[in-house]
Amino acid sequence: MTPPAHIAEVERRQDEIIRRMTPRRRLEIAIALYRTAWDYKQAWLRGQHPDWSAEQVASATRRIFLTGHAGD
Image 1 (cartoon, rainbow, N blue to C red):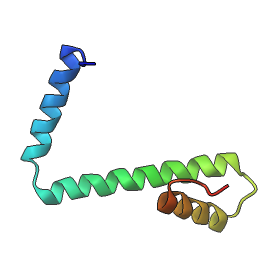
Image 2: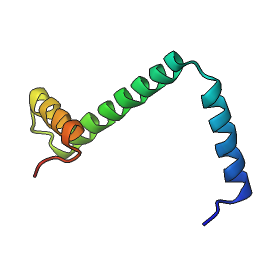
Image 3: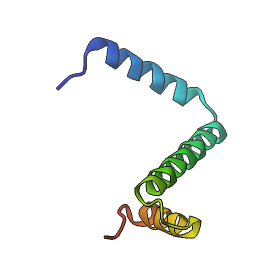
């Protein structure tokens, strides 16, 4: 299925912007996105398990990021 023209144009512009970035800048953005995902996952886990210690939340976050699932 072909995306609507306006979506295709946005994707084209994004690709162009990303191609013009230096490798260092692309890496910086990737690291920032990873850290944001990590923070969101920890916040979600704290909400789901308010009784867990900080270490339990950190351990579960590491497991999820290493394996792609919580392991339950």
